[in-house]
Length: 572
Image (tube, rainbow, N blue to C red; front, side, top):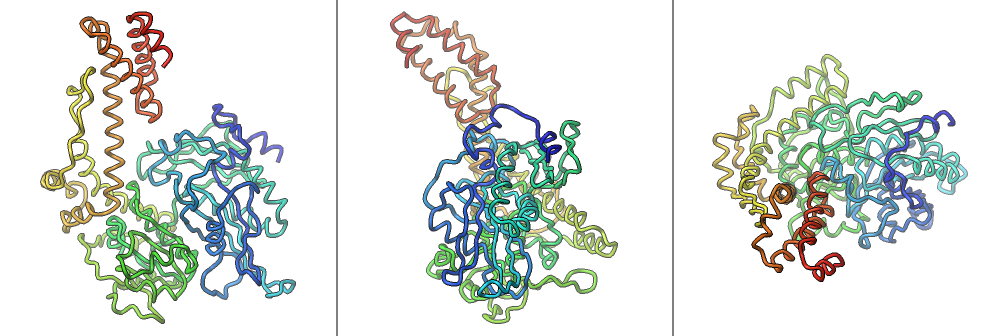
């Protein structure tokens, strides 16, 4: 370990060193839970680490149920899966001191969750004659706000087997090692030592070109002995996840884009959670703004909310394994039932689209149960390319890259016209003058946007034919449009604020003050101060020099006023 600690991540800016206990640990993981099976209580929380991390009783109960397979599976051995649960009991402080920099610099799809936790589970079930039930059943769970499914599942593969053998002292040692890691900084390649292994990861950044492969960092100081290089902290093997539904990928992409309620019924929590995460990731770089539960059980606190028939199902994708859900969720509009992975011939056996009426309570066959008609035609060339890849025994990661590239181009073809139209609503730079409030962004008019599609629509970048206009009209009613529009509008408003500050810096402030009354000058000082505070709090896209110049302007203006006013303004 000496060599590793010497070769570990080199010290970076002061902010990386958290002054609070467990500050660095909390940058990655909120807590580690151990869930065991108690004969009298059922699933029970055996341990939460760090010991002073506070989970509410409701959260503990949810984590206990979500950490074990919901339906009986006779399979012995180790299983890995993930879940996502709503935080209960309001916001709470974290030892990780973050000014929001991570979320500003990370891709929208990888932002730190504010109101939900992810749970990454390693479940072991083995025969053990020393236990009263004859079985050892235990889960090690990493609870985090980061959607780094690959990194955390890889971490669990390293630490869970050791923990099940050596128990708490081993877990304490691992947590102390994680507490030495540098924080996740978008755009950086990090070396993360744990248990004699170094995991090397690159944290994606918002400025990365969509679809580009992670950049390898070639800094000699960072070349550690034989690191375990993870190609991605979060990307799943899409080809493997989507194997039974490849010919319906177009339909599934549309259902995700429109935020439609969907149930994924799978034989295991692993398959259910992977399918849900694959579905919600297929819109990248567009953020999926609806709720999603990679694995959901009948004990969940939201069970009644989702199974009620008195209101329409919510905009959510839920992954389930218990056959009981076939009965309780059969009123949902889209149900994807996947079976055990089975290969037949060249292409994996594909499920069929079936009418919802054919959804039987018992012995439901795999299929997509829906009456949804796609707006766009199928892309047969994609299926042919994937089929050719199977025949040539092309590696799964290459097939996944093909699939991801196809979905990325499809999303970009859909979203680029919206981006162009949104950009046209921005006021011209020459309309921004220093002594007036910046002009407003023009309102988004759906009909004007529709007209713009005639000469600047998705047909320019996508060969797929179909009812694109109908798809846009449905998209306008979805939470994904609302989320995209709010984000863009916020960014444009901040850009306007930044341009206005720059216009003020370039103005001749002394000339402006010549014919102004003291009241007007004091009013300007107060407004400039307010702008400066807002620019710093909201981290507006403004250069530091601009902010410094505004500060100097304020000093210059105050210096021109009578001494009594200067005293008041210097001590607000």
